Length: 317
Image 1 (cartoon, helix red, strand yellow):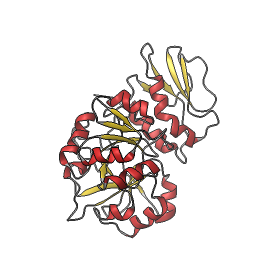
Image 2 (cartoon, rainbow, N blue to C red):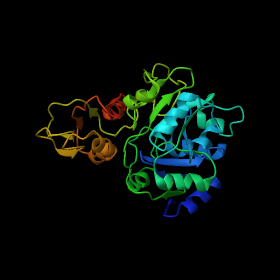
Image 3 (cartoon, one colour):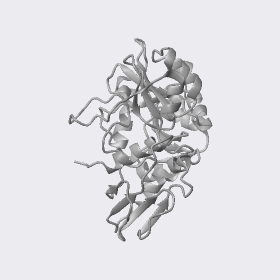
């Protein structure tokens, strides 16, 4: 039975006991486990049905706690000063004495780390006293959760508890930046626009999703090609909509849809990002042929939104 909690001290005690606890961050709800407890980390994969070659992000209460597990360079320190706490994940080399279980990093010599920008999450992490591995609190490949109700819909009975933290402000996952190989590569667009990152450390390369191999080794979370997927087929960049389709609208909605969910009537990308996963869930209902999504601009948070839609629309084999 999954219980609802209001006290972060109770949630921290469960984490230390090896249980799974979902909690709010500024991006989406995460499914947390003690990252130093291999059995607890394995429970994340079991609860989500998540491929074991996909590494997890480890969450910390502050940068110094993260630096105890990974080796930051000057760029990492500058980015942490600029964007932590906040929706930026850095992939960095593990320290030789890193105490995070290897399963949390899919056996790689790197670790994805971040300090979340949500007061409840930070309090939980301080009280837990351990790094917390936490992917999104949903079944693997499904739409990410931005409310407690979403978490319970996906994982009720599979995890110990959900710590109530309200609706998530950003609504899309963190930006993931790989600094481990000497350069700087954007592995996943997200809550921090790449333009803001480049203003701090200079040019950033763009990495493509890894999809050629049947079981690739992924450098970070969120690189599975078919991901964040509703049950209904998703059609992108729609300029017209059929009567048996639902419409994910951005701005003035197209006429004729069976059902409409408005991401942002004023075409505000921050509002659209915060509403994206709720919209996909709201439209994912039986009796419809599919979901048509209106075009999303390419600036600011637009690439992060489009990245989620691309993955949701990818063929599932």
